[in-house]
Image (tube, rainbow over the protein chains, first blue to last red):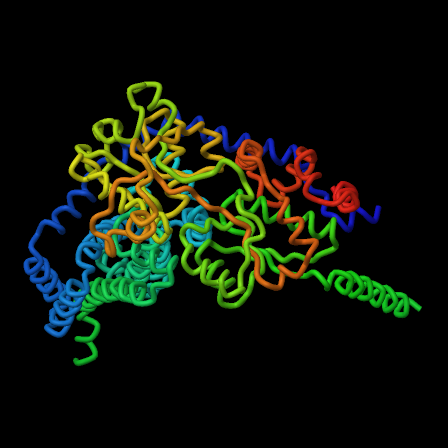
Length: 297
Length: 334
């Protein structure tokens, strides 16, 4: 009797082993039969990623810097930011991190675009239906907390090492904030305002695009910020499954205690994150200029 | 009344703990539980035998080769590295041994081990003409790289491992770039394993770096390729190949150096005669180690589970490592 309380009545060693083995062999045979089909499903993304990386690497560096500065100005309309980004890129190149940085930019821009283009619609859908919210929220919790290699191992078995598993790893981790904050932003829109919109005879589409999304923009952009930051934080993990980029030297530095190498590449990742984020945030602010305008009235 | 009973029970429990720790104090140390299965198995076997057979108290400290070696060398902790591949830390280790800080308790705790370049058995079946690495290097088209199908893919060693530099040097020495190969960095052990298992499970061609004894080598029956050239001397290897392309521009092609694996201990352990005596006899035969690793992989067993299985199934091996009295205690504890 006492034994029952001292030792947890656990599944027997053999049964547990058989249970684990069954899951493993089921996955193995799934991977053997469907692996190639799934691989070819992701091929277009892989080709696009390779094409983008090659384009970035083949373009002469002054052009890249000019394009980045131009994009900064277009997005943010700020000379300071453009100048800052030129400086950062020159420094990155000067310190010998140009190629790794281009690989990382290719991965991160595709990952961010993918996250935003899936995340915002999903967030909107969640905001409109309590049932969807009830279903999706736990999935997002899993995505954010499950240890990365737990789901990366099956992905590796299916797709091998390389860019696509890296992209999946980044997106699984980086997408939840944009979904959550889009949902939250839309749900927080004042009921009175919606009533007013209804009173003016707005249909569903007008209500969403004319009232709810514009009013939710601050939250949505906070979500985009989080997504970008998390995507860049995942660069190192992506490198652990064979993605070229700034993560590889970081891994090397961690293993061998190369302080300077780690710091330089780590800071390059931070710099990229800041440029990406400031441009998008300033773009977002411009979209919301009407708010500040009202204050001045 | 109740209160008194509870107090007595608590005190008794505490006393039992105190006595247990006190009796084990004379031999209490930390052992590196390195992050690959054979080292973890050895660490756990050592822990079980030393704790149950000799009344020691062993704390396992997880860590990788370089990190473990540095803390052992600088801080004297953990006290034991059961399976240290010393090629990558040869110079500092030699220095530490000369200065009397670290000692080798046994050279070669596992027999028949080593690093090298491997292919899947299917590759050899389909291409019996592949006798050495040199033959494979002529056919990059059989190992197409995922990101550039016109090149052959050679899977090197994960970023930051000692062998990464070695593979980079050999890649240059064998002029592999000119022959149409790319060196792929798998990034981590998970990446390397995933890449090899994926190919081996599907019977695809795979050409890359790995080492034995490992469960994956045993499980997929991977084939070690002869380099087709002799070992070109330790001056070329230690002075050039192992230092990587940044420090050494013209490496000569060479077979892989013989791997030296040791159980390394700090000076504190050296004074524990019984423990040292145990280490000096503790040799795992290669085939048994491989079979244990396949068992651990198949059953998803951790080092501790693997140790129990080993102690249960292979008593004929470990019985020779310890005194009769200790062996009785270990058997009783199983």
